[in-house]
Length: 246
Image (tube, rainbow, N blue to C red; front, side):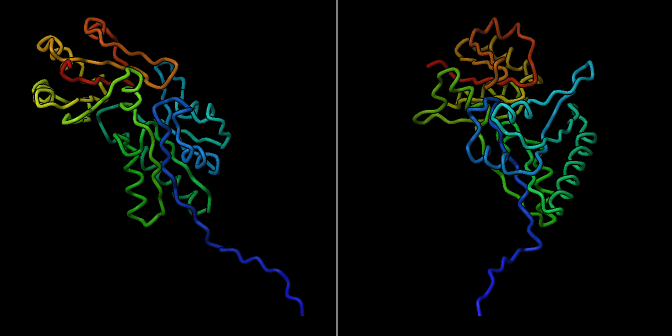
C-alpha cells in the first residue's frame, strides 16, 4: 500500500517579535540581517514624528523604503517630552499591538533607529514582552557615534584610551573628569546639553570637540570649528565627541 505524503503543520506557529536596528540613517549601513528581518515580516511597527504644522514624518519608514523593503508599516508617534507618562502610554499601545499580531501568528518587526540596545526607549516594550514570555529577538545595528567617527575619519580609541558614551545630561565637571583621565567622551542627545559643551569649549582650548548632526542622512553635518559649533541651532539628532588634542 502506497502511503500518501502528509504535511504536518504546527497549528501554534508563533514567531519572535523582532526589534530591528536600522542603523544611523544610511540604508547601506543597515545590516543584512536587519534587512532580511524587515523583508520577512508581515508588519513593521516604526517610529514617527509630528512637526509644528501637524505633519507626520517617519525617518524610519523612509529608510526602510530606501533599502527596498515593501512590507506594510504602521507608525507610532512618541511624544518628545521629559514627562514620561505620555511616552509610556505609547509604549503600552505598541506592546498591545505587537502582542495581538504575535498571537495571530504574524511576523512582527519593530524598527529602531540606530541600535536597539543604545538609548533606545523601545526597550520598555521588549522588557514587557519578556515578562509575559513572548518570544523576542534583538538585532544589532551601527550606532550613530560609530558612524560619526567614520564621517570625521576619527580613530575613536587607541592604546590605553577609553570610550564613554553618555546622554545629554553630563555636567562640565563630569566631562572634564573623563577627558582629563584619557577618555574619549561621546555625548548623545546633545540638544539638552549644549550649555555644558559650550562652557567646556570656553574653558578648555586643549579639548577637541567634534560636532555632528543627522549622521548617515543626506542632511549630515560635521564640524570641529568651535565658533561654528557655538552658533549652531542644535537639532534632536546631534552628538559630540570630545577628547584631548593629540
